[in-house]
Amino acid sequence: MKIAMFASEALPISKTGGLADVVYALSKELTKSEDEVIIVTPYYASAKIKGHHLKNLGKMTVHMSWRNQEADLYCTKIEGVTYYLIGNPYYYGRSNLYGYHDDCERFAFFSLACLDLLKRIEFPADIIHVHDWQVGMVPTLLKEKYCYDPFYDKMKTILTIHNPAFKGMVDRYFLNDFWGLSDDLYDSGQVRFDNMVSTLKAGIVYADKITTVSPTHRNELLDPYSDQRLNGVLELRKYDFQGIVNGIDYKEWNPKTDPFIKANYDVKDWKEGKAICQKDLLKTFGIEKGKGPLFGLVSRLSWQKGIDLVISAARNFLNDYNDCSLIILGSGEYELEGRVQALRDEFPNRCGIYIGYHNELSHKIYAGCDFFLMPSLFEPCGISQMISQRYGCLPIVRYTGGLKDTVEGWLDENDKKADGIGFNNYDVNGLSYGMGRAKELYLNSSEYDKIVVNALKKDNSWKRSAKEYRALYLELAK
Ligand code: ADP
Ligand code: GLC
Image (tube, rainbow, N blue to C red; front, side, top):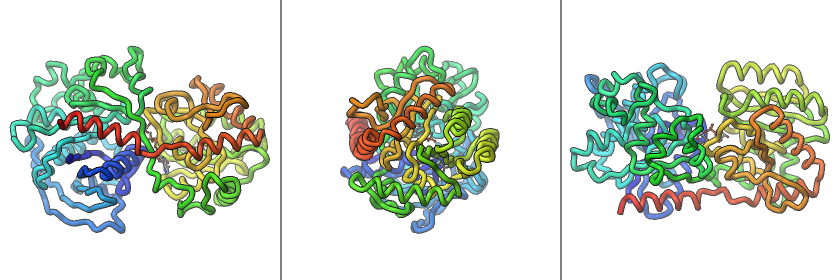
């Protein structure tokens, strides 16, 4: 099969969150069968291209209604996957990937460029797999515009919803102005959401199959009381809508070979290995720790992630127990960044903070911490809790979405399966309860060792999930 992934970020070129991990690792796993996989992604100013040989494929004109915009095309091969990078200095020559008033226009250009590129490079994809709102309009474009060209008419589409909170909302005027689509699509309700156009909803209506990144999140999205308010349209597509849990890249995330951590370890020598990594981590942040556990967090600092709960619960906890410590790595909302820094100022010896994005440091945190905080308000899947398990850093999660599907919370001493700590309520008491349970477990050393070993042994690789995606592709391509 020929598979084309269209995504606004993909490792190792760009990343702000788990989407980039998924697009890269899933594609890599798919190439292990005889499938040909390409990834098409923007060429941002911050693209990490060092060490990759980029071939310049020249320019391509993309017609966005009345605009003729130039795309600079590059390609490179990474681990069996061919990457096509779409450049345009006006749209992508900026310091961040997202967060601009014209994001919809930037990714409308990208969506059109992706489809045009397939013809330009003569890649008659069997499957086009699009990810999130940025490329949500692709299935609509294919069925309403490009299908009149025989090159495109047999292509099938899958939309994966990674984050339903971002819906790609734009005024109806732009339906024609950006994508050259008819107003009828708005009037009939096909692409309308809250009296605007939503590219995510358009994807749900037009894609041949829809997935989200865990079975529990699929059910949450279909719930009539879902906060995301996509339940109505998803109900209509229920039988084409599946939840497939993410995996993690076992090569990138492997404590046995990780070049960023002070000591390498696996399930046999994790105690000694983690102790060395922890010492190194505490030194890096200039903090200390007593007999209690070291909690860690690596995250976008966003309302989605329960950071406000972390700040309050951790403040209480650090006040109550002077043998515990905390390390936070993250960046995001300005107010949360300020509040996190204020927490460090209150506990300068036991709280370490790094505001920013830092991959190497994230590896050190997963390896050096005892527990990982993930009290998300909602979490379609989550990658960090699985990385934590792989490094023997037990995740403390709120049971929502993929966190429920990937973490077995510790119950008691008869519990043989647990590989983390779980709680239900999204409030400070919920997280405080989780942290309290963690401390109790940590101080019961034989019990703690057993749970860490369960986590270290857990299979969170892409093998099984890539098989599920492939089965979907095959069903569509037949
Ligand atoms: P989301 O995609 O919603 O942000 P996930 O748990 O799916 O959450 O994925 C987050 C990924 O981004 C993980 O690989 C995590 O290690 C990484 N990450 C998040 N924030 C940072 C940061 N500040 N520095 C380095 N890595 C980060
Ligand atoms: C989104 C979700 C996260 C998921 C990631 C990759 O960013 O918030 O839960 O793991 O996408 O699918």
